[in-house]
Image (cartoon, rainbow, N blue to C red; front, side, top):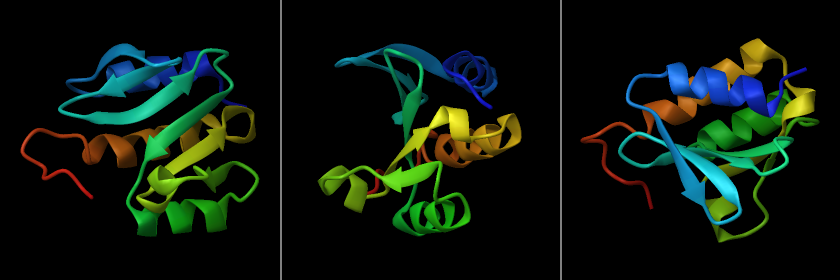
Length: 108
């Protein structure tokens, strides 16, 4: 069972990651935000491609779901961290982190 502390530890170990407030959440970013963590540390929103989102939601439907708005249609995906193992969390973070690198075009 993953926690917000696990997310913070793993995300900050990824090269170039910094953390900053983002509305009522904490945002982890390199050149752009790749994951946000809720204030209570129980949920997070990952920036996946729509195909990655579909795959994650298919493989772990109890853990991942599209954010229920236009951001979700663009790939932003909500997760209940308690439903992820640490390996699944790290894989999700690395996948989202790859999209946040400098020089990568912003997805629309």
